[in-house]
Every structure is written in structure tokens, then in C-alpha cells.
Amino acid sequence: MNLDPELYSIRSKPLDSIKAHFTKTLPQLGWGKSGAEEVVLDIGCGPGGITMQLVLPLFPQLKKIFAVDSLPNMIKFAKTNNSHPKIEYSVADIEEWSTVEKWLGQITKIVSIHCFQWLKDKKKGFYNVHQLLKTGGEAAICFVSDSSVYKSILEVKKKPKWKDLFQGVDDCVSDGYIYKHDCLYFKKMIEEIGFDVRHCTEERKIETFSSDDEYRSFFASICVLTSHVPVHLKEEFKDDFFDEMLKENGRDENGLPLYGAKLIEIVVKKK
Image (tube, rainbow, N blue to C red; front, side, top):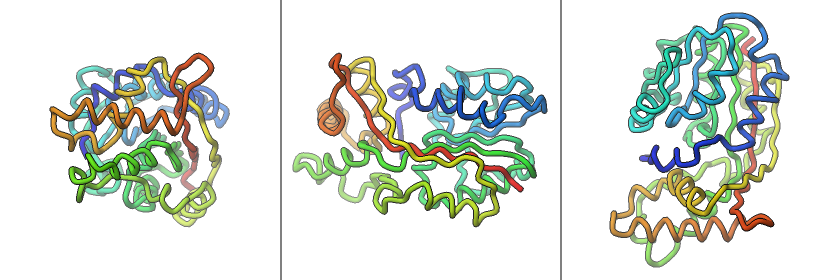
């Protein structure tokens, strides 16, 4: 998988649903209010925008944020564009224990935003989260269960002009989308690992983008097929993907492009 951090970062502000998670849901659950010194792990930090804008301000008694992503180009971009003395960026993969084991039992809070839908083995990801937390530590994990991005990827792949190009390419469409895994499915999985579940919701969210250019760039950046397209065809592919996304989502009353997805929010505590 190879995603483009510069395209991704064209949308400078977080999605409204994610902003609400950090500014409303987590404070209501007591996050940022304990007065205790926090050691935070941000899993799947991407280019670091959410780490800087939402994770960092949530913890007034912060010792350190370890922000990790499996893609080296994301970490390089984050170090350059979203650096802070209390944030340490590094390459790591929550599915690969050897890359995260140095934090065994040391983390007080874990956050992960729009990362777990990419995991091939989500149970392993949740298990490793459990291992990294201190007893009494908590994790807040948000990920997409059903998205028009997945449907658009599958539709574009079938088009005659693209289908040969993507033969054998992993489209990274989530198994949760294919098998219709819902919030209760993941709640059971997490409880079997040994967590107390404090919060578990699944809700369809609608986001409005400020322009067609922002919409086109952002979704091209999270479509794994984009990096497999030759340079001379890249803009044509982005146009086709934009058209497919727009067909699925439509526009608001002001003509701005919309994006709809089901978002699962889970907050758990290690017993």
C-alpha cells in the first residue's frame, strides 16, 4: 500500500465526525480530565494532522505522544509538517508485534482514527492494543465499516479501461465491508480479548467537502489503486474515481460534494 500524504493533507481540517469524537465523546468519558500524566500512542497517524490538531490538545498532562504509521512516507511528511516536542513519530505496524513491543504495558491512552479498517487481522490489532496498555489504560478506536469509497473502488476496477491495470492488485477493501461486520461483531471480539467496553456505536456520518478539488484530491489519496496508475493516466483515473464517488454520494443544497460512511466508535478499558 502506498498513499500520498500531500494529497491527503489538502483537506487541512479533520472530518467533522472525528472532531466531535475528540471534543465531545472522549471528554464526556473523562479523557483529559484525570490530572494524571499520560503516555499516548496514536496508531495510524498518517501525515500527523489529527495528532497535532486533536490528540495533542486533549491531554493537558501529557508526557509524550508516540505517533506511528506503517507507511514511511506518511511519517516523513509528519516529521516535516506536524512536529512538536511532545510528539515522537516513527514507522510501526500494529499488526506486526515486533514493531511495537517496546511499548509493552507502558501506554495509558491509545487513539486510532481511520486505521483499523485497513488491517487484515483486526483481532490481532485489538489484541496488541491490549498488550501495550497499562492496566486501567484506555483505547479509543474509530474506523469505517461501510463506505462509498469501497464501492467506488470496486466499480472503477471493473471498468474496461482500468481492469487490466489492476489485475492482481490488492484493493484493500475492508473485510468488514464485504462481510457486513457491525458494531456488535467487534464488541464481542474485543470482550473476548479481555477489555471492558465503555462505548460502542455505529452511525452513518455525512461529511461536506468545501470544493470539488478538495474532494477529488482527498479520495484519490486514500484509494490504494491510485499509486498503481501510470503518471500519464493519473489525472484521468482521479477524474473517474471522483465521478464514481459523486455518483454514490451526491451534493448538498449548495452544490458541494458529500461523503457518507458508517463509522464505528469504540472506547475500551484494560481490566
